[in-house]
Length: 124
Image 1: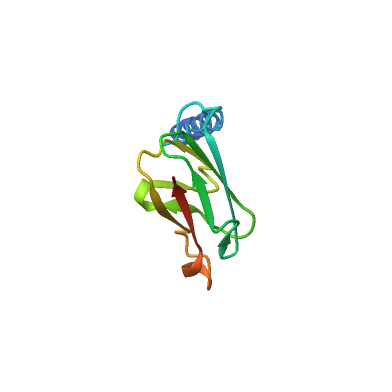
Image 2 (image 1 turned 60 degrees about the vertical axis):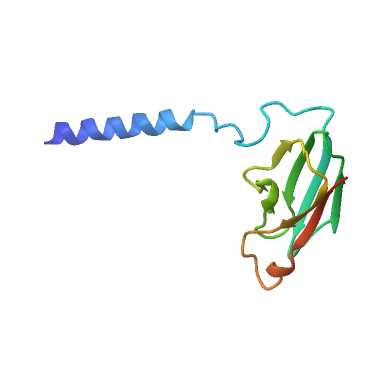
């Protein structure tokens, strides 16, 4: 019985050590390599607001969105484009193919001002 427990302990330790050396998975949904010619949109969040009321980009040109939460737990979701960036997935690159105004919302319940934490991405 002691041998079985010792063997299980050794296997558990070996698995733990092996897991520590793994690289994190690539950022799903974002391009594999950042496009140096992409339009840059930096969204900064703080408690109950984004740093800009609107962000403008050109249709048909690559866009890289970068997210940073300066205060509190937030994200930035553009539901109509199926894009979400947060503190774990900080960037997303895409090419907008349709002009329009897209709502950016925080989808993490972040307190009393959560419902008014809205901005716009305008694709011209």
